[in-house]
Amino acid sequence: MLIATRRSQDSLIVRMTGELDLRTAELFRSEVRRAWEAPPRPRHLILDLRGLTFIDSAGVGAILARCRDVSHSTAGRVVAFGTRPHVHRTLAMAGAWRVMHVAATQREALAVAKGEGSA
Image (cartoon, rainbow, N blue to C red):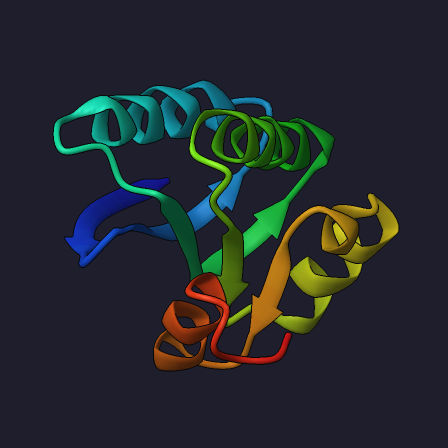
């Protein structure tokens, strides 16, 4: 699993490549926590899932925990984009789309985070 983070305005964009599973979920948690807590703290979390090839329940749990953190700490939004069909289905079955938004592109994800788009 490779994780890259960067800032765009008031959003933290997290790009994942590889598998988010029991073996890599803690890496995801710690990398996102480190980037999230670095000042100035962002308001929204954008998940770039184009490179995510597999996700299991531990990975879903790690993402949902970040959703909870974002909504409680900043009243921000979590938006995912670029989900592959099997990753999208796994997140849908876990109910992730009830607590986070989905977008087709990064541009759309940033707009949705700001409340300007529809997702």
